[in-house]
Length: 446
Image (cartoon, rainbow, N blue to C red; front, side, top):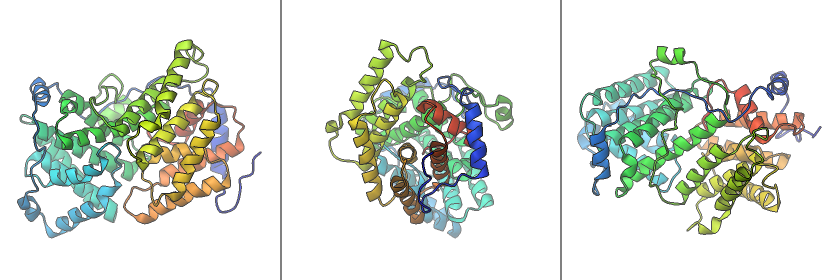
């Protein structure tokens, strides 16, 4: 059995880990990958053809008004300080990735201060809820702002919803999704309802058909990122499991079909980051376990080879972008591991892993948990494990980003299982078993 390594980065196999080890051995045959989990969303929408037409015909416009000083003036001193904290600190904890990802926090701030409409109020209250949790970890203050945001969203649905109102709904939904991830990511799957509700709203209101407004495309790109990462979680967490509808109805979540986040991806997004996300979704949808009848078909082999070639053409990237490179490398590594026996773990694969850890060693912080997890699965020696743990610690010490404790724990569980088990499980099954056995709710890689 491989050594667990130096005391600095050793992952001690506790009784809980040994329990999990035995559980994995028993569950290895129980969980098969390839069946979509059908879950629900709390946002009940009706196709608004007028709004969709308005979005399709939209000419260039300013998505949001300039900040209204009156909104800020009406806040209590405590909430002014709290919103200032959101601007300076808590907004950084919202995971973003996309062509104009750096614009998203500024767009949210303008939305929150753009007026006193119910939809903009929802963005403001959502921001205050996230800031309250991030700064004080106050359950009651956070809940008060969160409830106020939900009431504002409900109130805004009573009349006609325009494009800007829909955009505010999306922003509030993603902020609330972020709050759920940070508050209860290991015990609740509610983050998924907000994220996938936002994705559904983008499609039903036609916001992804607006290509002439940079603010709007930045916002839609943000939803694209959340939607893609949700697909990864659903792909591997209890793949044969259907969430209990009765408990969702009791909690006020209405059911809908087909599977959550399957309303189609936002269309018309351009730029290398979104090309990576589109390819990543195709990879999630394509890879399957070796026992699947399609595994050895010529069509399946050709599909994987085509995806691999598309991702490996990094010369097309106009300029180096750290986040994009992390996602490109993690997607390539995931694809090669998931299709072992079809795509070789050759010198290219080894080079990608080496490149990944060189980047991780030089990053001051890293908020992107999907690459961290995929690279963590490749850290099979003490040196690489230390690189990853040091980066997680630097990110934690920074204080602006979400806690990485749950992702760190997942990575450590993977290390323990790698040290205890021979590689008798294929990669897809191993991910499914690890995530399903160790997580009570759908994990968020955001």
